[in-house]
Image 1 (tube, rainbow, N blue to C red):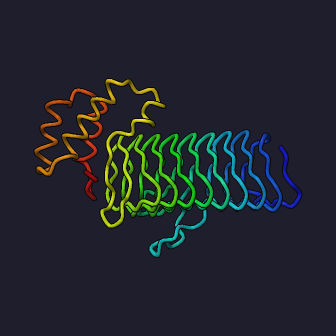
Image 2: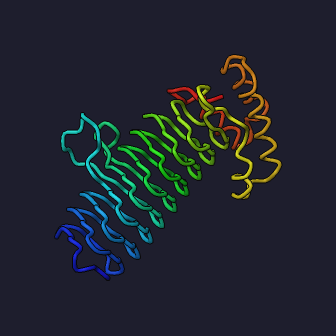
Length: 260
């Protein structure tokens, strides 16, 4: 264990013997820090935060502070960060609230770039990438492998589907479907451009599957017929393909509506 003499660690915190902690870092009560974690200088980690193996936390990060929610009255809630996560400078991630399940979660191998904000009760799947100056309001879920480009803002209770790509400077007030790419354009809201071809290829998705997703996109997103009708048609034509089924079920389960 390497702990700088200016670091302050609460006696109730559990810190693995392989952890490195930099200068002027403050670690609060009931924090758990797993093996091979690197906490750099000037980091604040508040109470009831869990950090998994191999995670790196860069300077001026704030983790596990009280949620910015007027309904929060001091109840016990948590922040859980997975393994091999990278959290860059000046990021803030808050604990959950009792109204949102009491937990904020960051999945394994996520990359959280500088000056990102993740609010209370958000849940990020594994391998999510959040670019700089992106903000998540409360109660947002982000599926595995999704990429959110810089300067984007996501409204409370929205869902970002797995392996989707959101372009920079986008504002989201509805759900972003899985496997798709899109961005905001002026006052038009998010416009989908089709499957996230580059990202899906990088993750090893077969060309035949990507071509099929192009068909699903054309059927659901490129017409103005009622959503229920096109989902039924998509199910009849593509419903046996797991990726297509994921998209169809995502649209049907939405409470805020899904971009088309």
